[in-house]
Amino acid sequence: MYLEVNSNSSISIGDNFTFTSNDCINPLCRNIRGCIVSYANAHIVIGNNVGMSSSCLWAQKSITIGNNVNIGGDCIIMDSDAHSLNYMDRRNPINDKANKKDEPI
Image 1: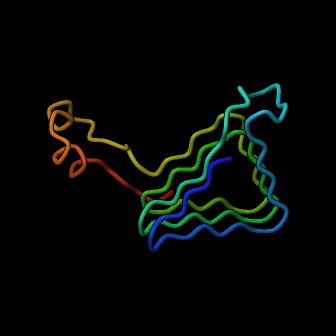
Image 2: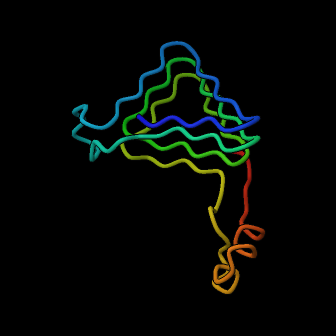
């Protein structure tokens, strides 16, 4: 599993958390390396009794997962478009970044 915590960000994980990743055998996913990434000033909160299989959590603002949640194989949870949805903005990296949408989950 890949874990990245950037400046002024946080990741909080509750009790009994299971994260299978990479070559752990799960017939419901491709067994790729999962990741949890909290970019600058973003927050990820994972409750108690949560399980994930090769999932990706990618927070620009915040992602909150409650208690007693199972997240299916290869699931990607992002609180951002990652780039502008306007093709003209995407031709310029500054406009692209300025016009992407980030909203808490």
